[in-house]
Image 1 (tube, protein in one colour):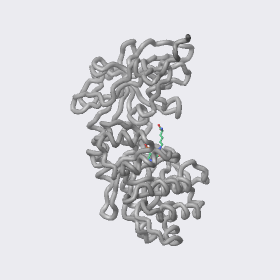
Image 2: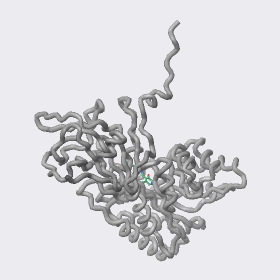
Image 3: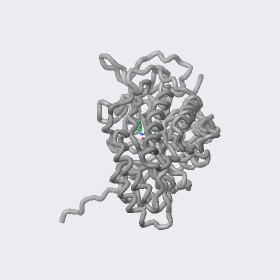
Image 4: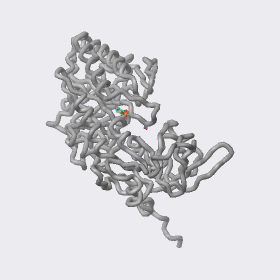
Length: 427
Ligand code: LLP
């Protein structure tokens, strides 16, 4: 009978050896995706960088892989930065993001020698300029996050009037942008290089990026004319789509990258811009499809309108169905040759009705003890995991050429109370 294999290892054997629930990454596939991006995002006209958005999945091993494959990385917190540092990541190749960076985080980034800080707003520019004076002799490159008023969600993108995003400064507030950039440009230990924008997630339509480029480059032209400041770098953000179910047909990475480079080439000519460097920040599309979650089926329960398949994990290891109504596909790892003849709801063990992994999904007829594998959980699964209901976060395996190893060990019960302090004895 046909069995699910992940990077040459049988999924059910991984489950037997390492336990469930467990996150399993196909390391070959991670590497392949990174290479695809690196190859596709290159141009004779621009210095091109692919910065992996580490929020999608961040651990020492992942950051090592990212570095090995020649990608840059984006970090959005002291924790992500720390992980990259401990992984030996070249700090020059880090972009430090966030709309609400603390002074401590900015200080940490300056101290670590982070290559680029992406500034979110006017007030932050002031704080960073001030903090950077404690680092004489250093020169940290900065970008400013702007909001170009293009928003993309799955198959639609809109040129919005949404000027109230919590991220960046809207291009409708050009005086504020100019003021912010002047602060960054004049600070003795900062270098202002250009703009960053990010228009959304799970973008299927390459034209959405072209629309973003249209807005950002037109704004850049206006900005240069008004200020005389030269923009050398544009960071176009992430949002490249990943395939979760058969409904998702993602354009190949090559197609999207080609469209971006074509649009940029054209815009730089048209506006006479001085942009020499381009950055993109894919997260999901690198990590999602390489990751699986393996569960063991517990009880099966019929209600009036539903068949529930209960598993030994749930919303604490994958919050996305509950939070975004995200859809996934699942298989029974050892019964792939059987037909998916049932419509079931795969539910987790958390005390919460919304704790669903698969709503009305097709599945082979499940029996207690079967290993159920959910596909494409590699992005924002582990990274959004919680200890709700005091459930330990499952461990994470990398599998390469049939060999599996822990890259994050599973939490145990002791881990769950590790930082807790009991009350003193009552006297
Ligand atoms: N760059 C910036 C500035 C971002 O804000 C994001 C995602 C990315 C890059 C990476 O986007 P990606 O290529 O992964 O779509 N938790 C949500 C996703 C939130 C993404 C937020 N920003 C989810 O599970 O769908």
